[in-house]
Amino acid sequence: MSLNSSTFLNEENAQGPKRNRECLGSLESQTPSSFQDNPLQQLQLASHKVLEKAQKSGRSKCPRCNSSRMFYCYTCFVPVETVPTKEIPTVKLPLKIDIIKHPNETDGKSTAVHAKLLAPDDVTIYKYPCIPEYKEKRHEIALIFPGSNSVSVKDIAFHLQKHSKKAVCDNDDDCSREPFLKQAKIEPKEEENLSEFIASNRNESTGLKKIIFIDSTWNQTNKIITDERLQGLLQVELKTRKTCFWRHQKGKPDTYLSTIEAIYYFFVDYHQEVLKENYKGQYDNLLFFFSFMYSMIKNAKCCKGKE
Image (cartoon, rainbow, N blue to C red; front, top):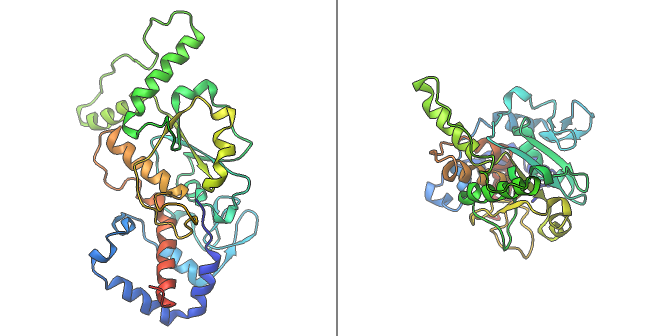
C-alpha cells in the first residue's frame, strides 16, 4: 500500500540517458500481447511529458515547505516547483473520500497522496488516531475493506437502505415509516439534460456520499479496523484484481492492492454497477503518477538485465 521512488530514480540516473532510451525503445517495440498482464497499458491518461521533464531535472523544492522532493511533496500534497500544477490532471469524483493513514506508514512510501494530488476537492487524508466520528452519518458511508460481512459494490444501495432504516428507528419510535432516502420524484427541466439527470439521480438514490480507505500495510490494519469509530459502517469488498505495485508485501498474494489501485478500481466498479453507465476512462488519471512510476521501474529493471 505504499511506494518509494527515490531508489529507482537514483539507479536510473546512474545508467545514463542513452541506455534509458534503448530500454524505452525495447519496451515500446513489444506487441500488445506482451502486456496482457498489465492493465495500465490500456489507461486513458494525460501526457506524462511533465513528469519526464521533471525526472531529468532531478529533485526540486516543495513550494510550501521548501523540502527537496521528486515530482510532489508527500507532506504538503502539492507538486514540486518543476511540475506545474496546471499540467497535472484533475479528476472529479462522484463521492468524497476519507483516507485513514496508519501512523507507522512512511509518508514517502504511500500512494494515498496520489489521490489527494489528483482529486484535491474530493479527498481528505487523516493520520490515525485523529479521525472523524462517523456514527451520525454511517447510513451515507462505506468502508472499503474485506471481511466476513463485506458486500459487493453492486449491493451497496440495498445495504445502505437497511442502514438508513435502522438509523431512523434509532432516533424515532415510529419505525413503520419509509426510510428518508425515499425522495419525491423530480423531473428534468430540459430533455437534452436527461442522461446527466439520470446519472445524478442514480448516484443520489444509493444514499452513498463518502467512502473510507485505510492506508497501511496489511499487517498494521487491525488497530484501525477495530477502532470503535469505524464499527457499524457498511464494509465493501472489491472484485479480485492483481496488483501492479512494485513494492509488493512479502508473503501476501498479488491480489492485495495498493491504496491508489483500490480507489481506482472502486470507482470503475461503482460507475458500471451502481451508476449503470459505460466506463470511458473517467477515473483513469487517478493512476497518473502510479502508471508513470510503474513504467520507470520496468525500464530500470530492463536496463539492469532483470527483465
